[in-house]
Length: 419
Image (cartoon, rainbow, N blue to C red):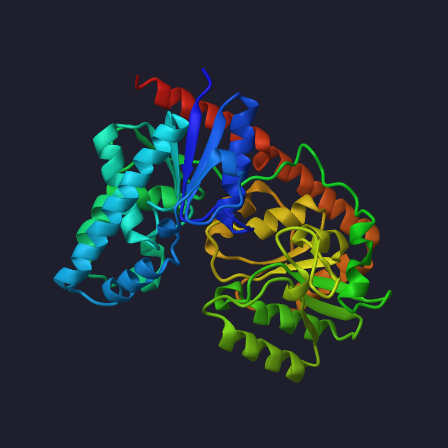
């Protein structure tokens, strides 16, 4: 039986993990005949299958006003309470409209019952599900207890009620083992582990004519070696280690390219990285103005590339993160058959590394041995080819769409067994 599945989040747009993974879920569900519809405060999905409610965006002014008054303090006044409930009531009514407009049969809630970036939306969804008994899947990418900014709040009761709720008819999905265990321990909820995936059954095409000028357009010479840091500029990405690596390689042909802009927390960090690169004599390139969600031309007629265009031309990927919920950039590097430096963040060490990938790994700091290994990878083409081919085969086994197909089929069957 084909289902009409409604995806709900604060945003389905761009290249954040929630937007990317939800699109993959929708693609796999479509293979089984299920139709996906979208509800969020910002959308880049087709208008005829979407309902955009601006108040559902985590950056909506009303939500920002609420956030300023509930996090980092232990009491809230009556006005804050009333505005939370008023916004939740409005959003709940819009969920009813979404369900009725597209005749939704199953909801997939993407992370907005996991981390309270939008407290009223989480309350609205929880109340809506309690009132309707709608079958649902809560897809959790990261939880509020993993972020220090949510450790002190004036809304512990709502956090317990809605993030996530203990709603009959809801199935929970997490992306790593630690989240599975924490959800069981904190909430008494069982969950299914579905890691982030890529379409390893269909390798990426070779660079086309549009992407042929990537290296030239970001200022690289023919003999330069492009070391790509494919992340936002925020402290938890550990980009200082990538700068240290290029400095230790000790050759001006190695250029460090950072693809994304600084996040809300990253401007001072960005300035620190630039100063560190100058001190280390590292050629550091911030190319965020030439990278977008899609190929296009800027007002000056210059090409805007996608992140995947950069992957195609990179020689090495650096991913020295201190913490990740999963780590999409790691899978992307493997997908494009690129060697990748990893800092052994907790989820990688527990969930990914045991699968048998061959990658140079650092434990919080760079050693001469790791740098020697990376130099060999960059200079020995056959050694590099064997490594990346091996990693591609491992990823095909554990992180391909076939894994997602089996898991989603199990979920839908389980939910329909409740009828």
